[in-house]
Image 1 (cartoon, rainbow, N blue to C red):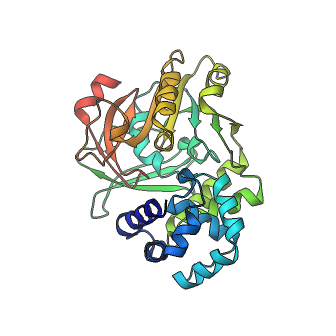
Image 2: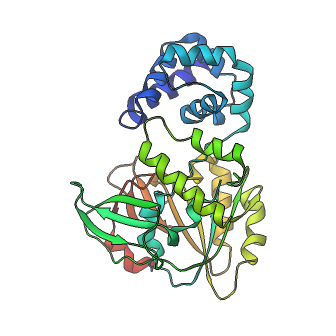
Length: 327
């Protein structure tokens, strides 16, 4: 089991943390060279020992954003609490920037829209109509902007668009709801602390963006049910207003499900009458998708890929040749 821990943290140290968080890169590299820490982390169930989750839990419990030796000393001193807390939590990214990559797809759907997110966490991705969007080229030059009808939002989503720029329009959302195994309540101080702990050290822009999105959600909290998405989907979907188009979203959540459970959930989504399905996932999760490489992520509508994208929405590239088939 320690080999699996070493391999996962090595991949994170080499390929995932660099460029996003120097602190996390140092911590992960330290784990790779530390057999004792690998043995401790091996006590955490495999699905709960992803580096971002382990690091977020330790910060929630009080670990400072220092060097590896400081972090190691904290984990060893609180090992039982770290293992227990990791074992009951899951990654809940709560990244509203993903909506920048989903916006052009939502714009293809006739409104008004009833938005239902699976794996919603705090529901921060249920407010695409209340965010401002700034789309740029690789140099940072602005190519397009879009604001809510009420004016510019405190949440400004800036994303790089590669290639052609499709027509963009703000969706009309008239109903918002979600399902999550462990919903995050934006009205709870403890839950807001968990949201902050999951922001990687050094991501100051992301911290500002998420704090502003939390304020929007606190002003009008979404309805988020606790439980299994497949078990609760049909009943919640049936409660959506009949005069709105039901759009079910799964941004970044399907990758955390075992293959059988993932296929069952996708079948359940497709069984909901007249619902549209919007997602952003690794291309390998869906048959028929294609990207520049097999490790890419795709944005899809009803199972057809319309864009290639960064998993957190930092950039996207429209696949115009598929748009007419999926609309």
